[in-house]
Image (cartoon, rainbow, N blue to C red; front, side, top):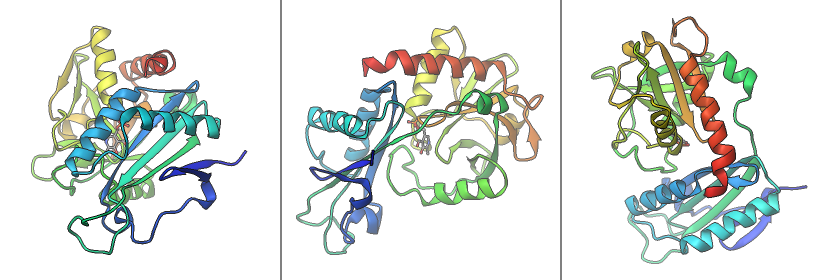
Length: 288
Ligand SMILES: Cc1ncc(COP(=O)(O)O)c(C=O)c1O
């Protein structure tokens, strides 16, 4: 069965879906996006994702294309038409097509696009192996809390990581050595006394929906969580490290640059949180 995309009110074959060459998303990265996971045919943490979508729209002074309920109906229709039970829904809204000029156009129709595809969280073999991360200089702007489609630093960082045999890049501030987050994931470490540490949800990071969920799952399990900055050196000497995101869930990190994390195997806290997140994703999914 072929994939279906949504473009401004129409459901079309994915391969035939297009937007204008004058679209401001294409020319200026003047748009926002969301990625929502689908587990057993339901959206995972749908409402927090839609709340963040609204915050991103407001930050760019973009009007919502439609009321939330109408948007949710399209999301469900995309699920149905693509017959995805396990995967991701991508949605993007830009300021639309207009004669190329940086200030907002007086009149333009926003471009709303959705795509949907099958994709699984990393499986048991991958999770039990863990992955490597590569530190890269933090060169991004000061509104990393906005889920904007301007992702060039992330693209370059992740490409560099892949070229060095690492799965993810960790943005690290040159001034103080603080790890803000990954190219498309949030960064966590576990200290010697078993506490979780992750950068606070300031404008220096994208406040991940998975990050928030993992923090609340950890707290509910009686763990201590500190939302405070940590440095690359602290991470290299940590008991454990892991990343979180919609597409990775909780993914253990076993190497940071040339340093092996602990004994080079995923830690028990990361594995435990991975399992808790999977249960949440499967069971809690229907609540969204
Ligand atoms: C820069 C960045 N940080 C963190 C995340 C993780 O966010 P979430 O858990 O909402 O997927 C993403 C997701 O794409 C991201 O791009």
